[in-house]
Structures are given as C-alpha cells and as structure tokens.
Length: 187
Image: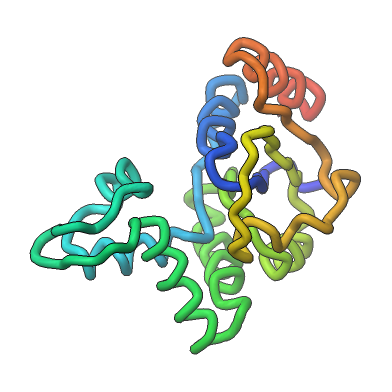
C-alpha cells in the first residue's frame, strides 16, 4: 500500500475536500491536494474569464451573466458538459491519464498527494496501478443525481476501499474518524 497517495471518492457535496484538508491537519507531513477535475475547471475558468476559486464558490449558481456570457447552466453543469465533451473527443480515460502523468511528473516536488475527487471506474482502475489508499466518503443526503459522475462507482463495493468515512456526523466525530485513519496508517 502506497501511503504517499490517498485517493478520495464520493458523491457531490459529501465533504471530500473537507476530509482532504482535515487529513493535512493530522498527518506528520503535509499532502498536496490534486483533483481529476482540475483541467476542466481551468478550461471553464479561461472560457468564463473568472478564476477557478471564484467559480468553485458559486458552482451551484447559474451563469446568468458572467463577463458577457449568459447561460442557464450552473457552473457544475458547465464543468460536466466540458468534461463529457473532452472525454468524447479524447477518450473516457483522458482525465485519468492526465492525473497519472501529473503525479509522475510532480513526484519529486510533491511526494505526498491526496486526490480529492475520484468519480469514475476508469479513474479507479488507473489509480489502482499506483496502489494508493482508497477512501470512500459517504453522506446520506438523498443525492438523486444520475449523471455518470455520481453513479459510475456505485457498483464498486465498499470492501474495495481501505477506509469508509461516514460524514453524517458532527465535525468533531469526522475529525475523530480521520485521526483514527492517520493513526492506523502511521502517517
């Protein structure tokens, strides 16, 4: 098991980024955060003319009029359509390949990485080659979204993950779950 690479999976709004940030509060050495969606967010940021941090704050908001661009899509929907477009053009595994390449390229500078957004089987299969720590983050929020990014990993059993984090609890209880994982892994 490669303790220098942690891969988080979970549906939208379950707290994957929160979990990643909390890991860094408790590990001996900090992990760099990476996401499969980073290239998509950068493309959308360039097209819309707003930095990706600002877009992330309002990703459930509609693009009513942003820098002269009008659309009834939410930023999240624009991310999805952009990703789907590139996958159709360049193959379903394009973002998995980009992540794999990035991890190899940055390994010296960032030897410890948490990938915060594994959503697809093709990403799971690619990451398995690196033998990471797989963590599924769950939260019972009644997510009825049927986009492939929300359901593609549904048939991958919990037993294929090293840890399951239940984020239906208090922040203190969430921290305790993460501390227990850090202690068990001795990271």
